[in-house]
Length: 414
Ligand SMILES: [Zn+2]
Image: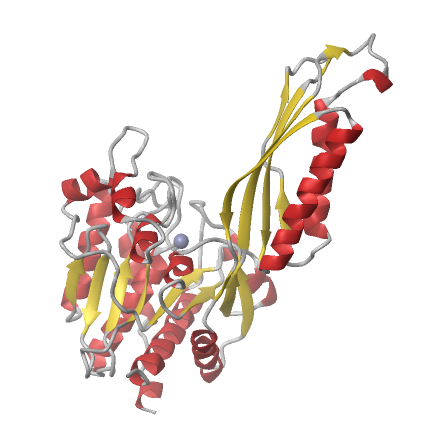
């Protein structure tokens, strides 16, 4: 196959990552480029200039999503799309999101330099506000594209100063004219750093992402009675703090009983009134449950509720129990996952299947297009951190896999 001879330029990709990292660079070697700030505009402008120099047509939709398009031999076919985000966390790194965008750009540059024209068009997209750090929720613009949120909702999300996405898009010149979504995408691939420790620990270069785990968040509160720690006998107490402690232990066991995929976390504990010699009458905990299998996650949720009810009964407590957020597990498209697997095998890169622990724009895209992801290792699994680091060879390997998976898909289109 002609495409087998096409090689991405790892040095060019690395140089672009380092150039983009200068925009919003922090003293500790990270990047702070919050969505729709002047720095985000500068990053977008640089991407647009690079994409045009690579022979692409660039368009922007009403959510500020940027599409760099390389025409196909049959340009009426729906595009094969890749991309991610350029916005970062306040103490973000050089790779989270940016890698997926610039790996896509390197695919475009490789095609342009070789003169190779795919059958279906190729598009590289920059999704607006993936991080959700300045504007909640996360992944809002890919969510609008996929019809999860409506456009008015997306544009009206505001930061802490009350500035909306719509206003800030206009201010930086990225409120585009194109309608958001509503068109066919033949396939979506997203390259990303793993943001976890598995690939590095096992010496694998490529993560073939098969699933994204589901996640459910709960608020749980126990109410008993404040009373004197010295004069109240143990059997007369309604101790909300003990209720919380029993439930924290039960939550931990939910994940451990479903190793290795299960995850269960209590991240917030608040016990009131918070006095050394008063038995606490109120306790609040947050619960975060995750699992890639929808039925297993539902089972964890049911068990959590049962434990909370039993504990409340045994300790004479009132229970307030609410699921406040739920993101169902996603299984990526088998044919797209196989394309990633074939490209990794073809290049003899050490690879393994992996489940994404974090959310990505690809989660929403998978609702409207066959989708898969390519992971590369990051040092010590560290991300959302200024010390986030990746190896140039791994970064290049992930991009080579992306190139071949996309070409295979594009040339077999229509
Ligand atoms: Zn990301």
